[in-house]
Length: 397
Image (cartoon, rainbow, N blue to C red; front, side, top):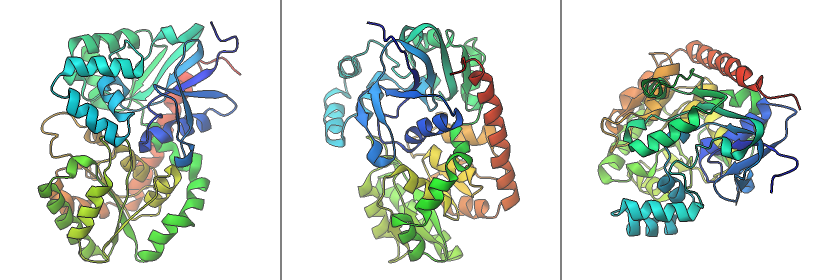
């Protein structure tokens, strides 16, 4: 039965613990003041204890549906279903289905209760009559890895959209080759400081962030690495590069997790890395709370990591940053590199192999602060210009 009072819905992967996905609904709600939103994903989850939202499964009848951001265009049903499990259940599912993709896809469809193969790309079937369908600064750099059927499903929905913007030049180019034009828009996380600077400042002064600042009064680097770096060769290279930079600069190392969902960050990796580093050089940051993570980055002297949104929050605060390409990346397009190539000055290192940490970080730390601040300010302007265009499509409250 149709909801008699359809909601405006922010939709995305905010039903799992991942830094950027937790941040998106906060940003969009703050940037569209006076509007009431429902927060929807693929599963019912309550992530408020981590600074996230209470998220409901997307239902039909939305007044307007806004895809809030993220790498939504290439996330398959299999990937989504795995990332919504707890780590033990995810490991069991991967062991059972990884060698049989067809059976895995069928299992994932049952898990999520959807016939769509690309579940975070939703079309007009979810809208009330006359509703607006918006895609805000979405990504899809691994487009070429999709099957023809998956690409056709995504294209069919994107052609229904009232507004589509993408966050990097790689996604823009692959869609253009498919006959779909999409303007560029920076990721909404470039707006984190003007939207939530006061909240983040409070978290800098208390709890786990204060403890890190007290432990490293001379300053620290915020360091984050996904489970992709858990092999011994990568851990050895991480320890070698980070210890060289710490010895040269006198900065400490704050090791933090940007996501607790499967395929994100593994605390065991950080413990193994810490054992490879000189005593006292690094500390584990225990909090998984959204605003604590933002505050840890904002209070740092710079960031090195594999999280795209770790990088973008560092950018938003005008800080040096270096992204790391996972060792398995090969020649596949990389969302971190694609974003940096699209929006950042050439002087800022982009995405480097793990054995290039030391020279890349030293290069980043030498970039003039004025250049970093100007880059952040220019992207805030670009984001607001783009959002104003699609926000103007929504009727007033």
